[in-house]
Amino acid sequence: MSLKQKLQAVLDECRIEAGIAITQIETGEQVEIDGSGLYPMASVFKIPILATVGQQIAQGRFNLDERVPLRTEDKSAGSGILPFFDAGLQPTRRDLITLMIIISDNTATDMTVDLVGGAQVVENAMHALGLTDIFFKLNCKDLLKSLWPADLAERPIEEIRAWSDANDILRDGVAFLRTGANNVSSANSMTRLNVMLYTGEIVPDAVRDELIRIMHTQQYNQRLPRFLPSGVPFAHKTGTIGPFCNDSGVITVAPDNHVAITAFAVWDEEKYFQQPEARNQRLFEVESALGKIGRITYDHYRG
Image (cartoon, rainbow, N blue to C red; front, side, top):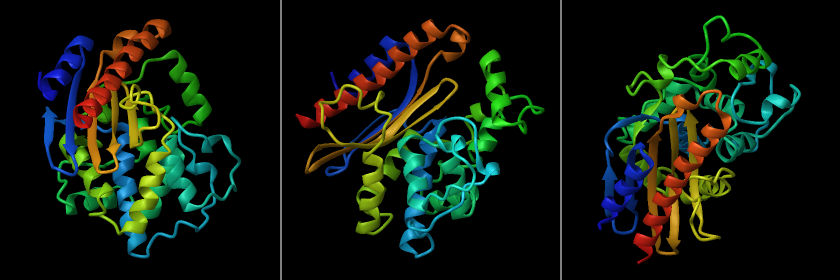
């Protein structure tokens, strides 16, 4: 079986849809399944933000050592730890982008988006790189607001969490759109962005090294790297929103063998609302399927 056939067999066995794009960086060999289809990035959009930060560092417009005060109004729902800290904390900009990538901190993300000039600046940066089907319209706060009733969206985080425990998210809002009105990308474009970032095409070597170092310290490793041999480096970022279960980055197969890979997966998550045991079992199956995709890809290019 070809690599593509093996990957499709995993998707079929797990009953999931996915956009997958793989590029062996040194040879340029590419494999894809629905590589040009648009999928909500979820927190994988933090890779385009990181790349935009890198460009501004190289231009002398973004100082990683500068400290930024945390304000109460900065705090965002969803993943992260900054909402649990007191206002007045002063993380560095380096701290913010690190939290954004390695634990997907939404507050750190939105603070970073503000620092680079807003969502449109990030989208424009991607389009200027030729990645014209990466769209970034909404920061974390605005994206998450579409999952809740309008009268709840401006309430304190604690009230939103309480509502979410008892109610399913709204599934007809912008967060689920697979168009340029949402934060979407094709698997092909996200993999191309990873290649450009990893090879230094976007930013100079020293900046590139800093950004890749952060991506290598990712703490959420239960998807594409799930079944990789211990110690195999994978610089990557995951993303989750509703039924979208994503992962994207670069696997170091050997010192002269690097593979960029993106998997944007869609599963039947809606069926399992308020069925925590069944939901966790099904999510285990989906994330394990992504792990099989990562391992099959690694084994193929290891030879």
